[in-house]
Image (tube, rainbow, N blue to C red; front, side, top):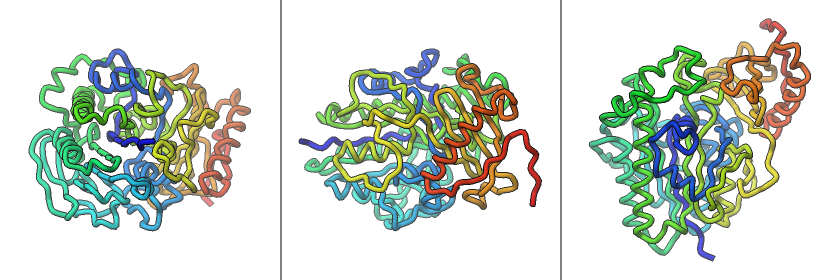
Length: 433
């Protein structure tokens, strides 16, 4: 049986509701909507770590961030850990990578071969792409560590490199191509989102997500360009899909579209992510290709940690020792487990109805990967409060629910290799000792 090609399209900081197939009030993503109508759209998909580097570490290895030591940005992926690219390469795949890497800690310098996670056949990338480019130009580095300049809208230029690979690759092997876009992440040095020209006018009358309406944040100013970024990703997904069709590879290519985390536009803390809220942790997830067809909408919970084993199973490659559950599996967990760093040392679970999150008192999320003691910080009843506006962490009427969720969270932490912590009731004051 012919092995499927794998195309992984990865955005950065993209809310799930920016796609028309999730939010019919948005008209920005016709190509991705079509992909969803042919494949499987996951209604309840979440990151396992709402920070760029840690989420990527989980995705490239199938292990949790604390297992890898990559619990925050700026920590290189361990070289002794097997990655999905290495596993697929051992199974006969060409491996190619384009875009943002964020797993080498080299900053603006080229990423040496030993820190590329097994992507050996084609490489045009930068470790921290937002530092080597802006929305309209910059540079990356090729396989030989030579600087590759580009001029034009960044997402378009990244796609040009992906198309170059697909046009010139070896045709006797299946490919695994990972395209890691920076959009719709804000441009750090500018402090704004940089959509293509015309974004402000095109999306001027955008529908405001309900979870943002209740807070000030900076969404009123930034959302049109944010949607412009999302529209550019859709346009470029369409370009790649068109080439696959012309090459006769479309039907035998497993296409995955998702993001590392969402964006709450400074409504939940001082920046855009690093919180337990759905605006921060819920992501789009569409899979189309062999084994994922029929225009289905999957209601079961899915996590980024599930994708490595899913891809490896589709490719017939080994996935021993990895966390997560393949999405081909019917009996799936009833919750997703989330580790939160940098803004805090936090842990959370999300079920279809409940969001439960705890935070370690007096621990620095940049310095500490975990803790032995946590305190309940958030509890949301998503059935009655889908926009997470009413925190029940101190509600006397929800003590039994918190106790049940507390047990589940501790179990998931242990399954992720952490020691069972003490979790204090959210009503209790905590003193340093």
